[in-house]
Image (cartoon, rainbow, N blue to C red; front, side, top):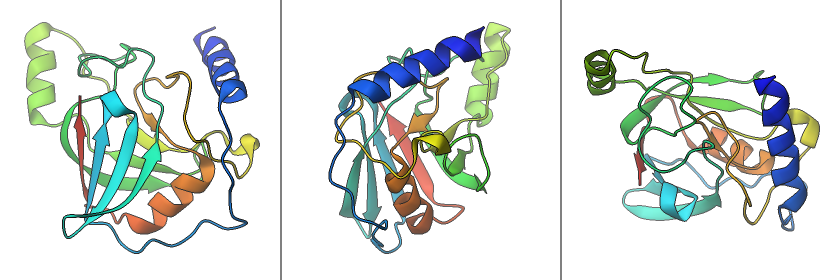
Length: 170
């Protein structure tokens, strides 16, 4: 049931999104040494040596205000993590795993008597959407992940190595 409603939310969000002009291939922007996610601006930014390489529009969890507190809360975590794994064959077009929860997240969840959750990714849209990007996402639709367009995740995938820090801020 939850999965079905998430699909409807995603379909509605994508149907309202404004596609941008996209090249036939994702462009290489070089390697990033830092990822910054600014939830309030709905942006993912890639940096190298303190210089901004590129900014991407994002969608967040269905309850985007505040940090992730527990599994299933629909929130995107806040803090400094690392990209620590990649899934080339995920349900979404490429997915980079975020190292949430960290020790502080585990401690906070333990004190509250809840499961902190996990499986937080930077990912594209379902592969069935094809090679598409958007200028913006009109709705937040993930379970707490950070979603970008499918061309965007291809660029990010190539630009971000495992171990790269990702800061997620309000």
